[in-house]
Length: 354
Ligand SMILES: *Cc1c(COP(=O)(O)O)cnc(C)c1O
Image (cartoon, rainbow, N blue to C red; front, top):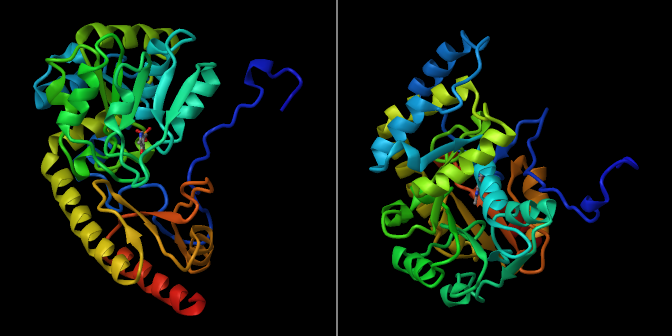
């Protein structure tokens, strides 16, 4: 770092993205991307939009907002798109957290929440998940903080029911509750249906996972018209053209091809069930996942060893070197063939080491 870097960033630990390997081709099961290409319609629309990028993109994302609002039964003023859901989550930290209103989230969850809080100088509380990695809903009642919960949670894959989320909302009437639904298309019910009843609810979703647009960077936040107006005021104070024209067009194509997304999600769910069962047969502990990844630990092979040995064999998974997660690896659910390659490699590693 230079000597000019503001001292307010002392101790900042930036988010560490999963590896994006160059050169050697890996089976990439480490960043929860889709193994499937984007919908043909998304690609076609993006290519057409590229012909006009001498013009600024539509800062209101009008066509995309209207389509999404119609699909979700909301008004267009309840929908705001961002450069990935990371950006709309960041706007929520900016809008609803400060010294008086700290952030609150589970100790094991999406790593970016902590980075956002730290980089903005926002105090935060990390609430330990239970021993079985489930969220203890009561821990969040009357917290006096802005609550961030990923549902399904990452990297645990565990799900809260809508009535559990409702209990958190009901017990925090004067604080904002943000439900991050990056993985909701792979299992579980969206909290969007609760928006009419809870003015303190925000819901985020992404096109990076189920819609195969991770590189396009497109995310969305849903809430009351008043809260979306807050977030828009900040967006227009930071980066009005936050979604580029190609991505906006690709997103619209993806939404117009919902059948393609649903079919891909079905395939991921089938492959997830297949891989979970086989991993358990190989001696792994793996809870049922509601997301497009599996968190698995083997009693005889530490997570870090498994990660390194899989990498030698050309398969990338994610390993988190933290106290509670060190024995696990997080495996993105890919194609059936990718899962078969993973299982074969794991079986070899177990034979070599156990
Ligand atoms: C992937 C992910 C995101 C961010 O996705 P974007 O690519 O920025 O849209 C947000 N939350 C969770 C829990 C995620 O896993």
